[in-house]
Length: 294
Image (cartoon, rainbow, N blue to C red; front, side, top):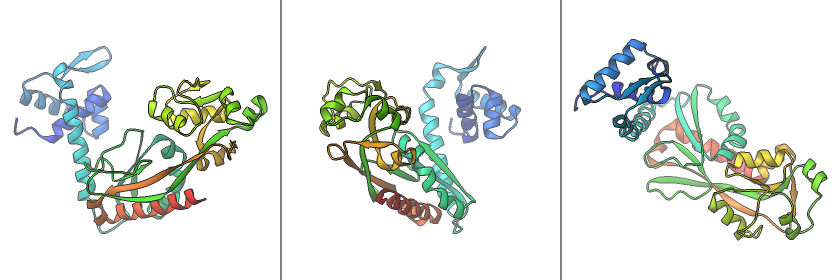
């Protein structure tokens, strides 16, 4: 057991992700025969079978499923090690991994990274776009854009500004349903809101938009799907001003409803000495500040 090599475990993880030896070989850029040999070596060292062959490919055994979390954690640690080890004085090469929520990661970050990407074309930018916060303390990502102030130990944070959130609709929606003259009228109009995410509904209730029993014409917990529904003219919904502007969405009842959400940039303090990451942190922070101030 003590002699098990990481390369064999990488093949195991690649087969899990691709479902076949050929897929694993492509992911790792190795020969399929090499992938098979390493997987067989791992099974021999462990004394168990990791996969069974089915009509759809290789299916993990119960024993393999118990190892998935551990090998994924090792992969995260290996990636963090590689990013740390490649901390050359030359800022123009290496990898910077940025994580963000789906709405900001898709609708805001790409245009903010444009200038930085132009200045450092040799850098590999990895964008992890999801609403599950990656662990900065474990260095699952180098830089995080968050809407809640990070509280992990050893984390450097910068408040870059606020998202100004209001109720928006498309011109088509306003033409079809008319412009509500009050919050009471808005509650009777087709609203777009959360489905099962209680935290989002609680925010709407606390902000005074609706009651806890509000029925939404379009209900989805995915913020990108909510934006798509607003753009399609399906109803009225929450949207940050910086996201609404490029789509010419129109704010409704701006004097009656709206709130602000702080936007934070964070990274582990150990990464400050890696120039490419600290430079990306500074550039992204400045770009976010300029975007949110506008």
